[in-house]
Amino acid sequence: MDRLSKEKVVSEFNEIFNNSEIVIVVHYEGLDALSITSLRNETYDKDVSFKVTKNRLIKLAIEKTQYKNIVELFKGPTAIAYSNDIVATSKVIHNYSKQNEKLVILGGALKDKTIDLEEIKSLAALPSLDEIRANFVTMMSTPASRIASVVSAPGARVARVLNAYAVKDQVA
Image (cartoon, rainbow, N blue to C red; front, side, top):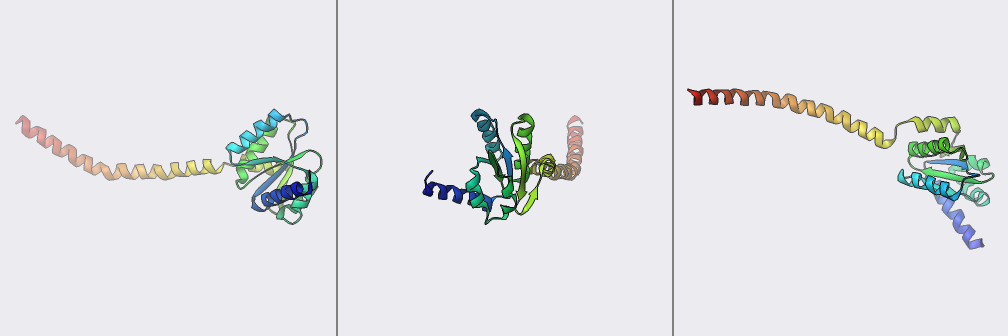
């Protein structure tokens, strides 16, 4: 890799670290290309990114960011999962690591706060933003439907009474 390419890679990683809410570092030793592609597909579906790192270049990119406290995690074959959705990133990586023991979670950070495997598991157990939105919409729509039925009930009663008088007049 020539100097210009290395500078470009460092710049890309620097941008990733400056624009992400969470970064999770993993070892992927033993994962074949098909498994990594499968993981990337899962992350892509959840608006999470997964990128194999070059440790020497990562160390250059990370030193002037809030994520400099996780620089020691970059040893051996490492990759990062990153996103602005903290829960989705944690869920995708944790679930994939449960399915494939060759993906080992080393740790990560929420900006300048380091997180370990247990904290990542805790984040993965939380409901996702989409689940929270769905629950909120359900909670909000239930009272609205109840209000509509209560408000419409007197009108329906009046209509039934008027209909009964109309039928009674037609029979007579």
